[in-house]
Length: 81
Image 1 (tube, rainbow, N blue to C red):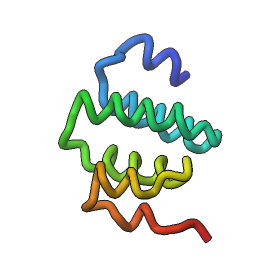
Image 2: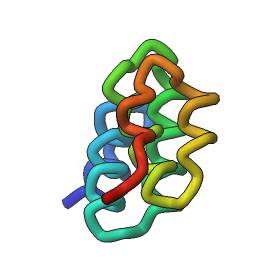
Image 3: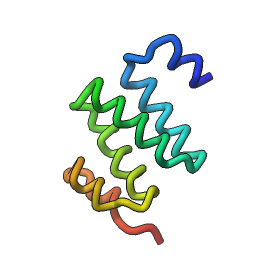
């Protein structure tokens, strides 16, 4: 379903955001990061996407990179417990 949505509208930040959510839940951290970076390239003011990026970077083992991208979402960079 997600692949079909991407095929229909690759220029939608929302489609890229949802793709990132799906990839992150599948533990495909790098794919999630790529999708969310595409969403942010399409809409740099997409604050939910910025928060998602910090979260995906944390799960990929790079929480400090999340702080660089979106310091206002630092709470998502807290260490995992």
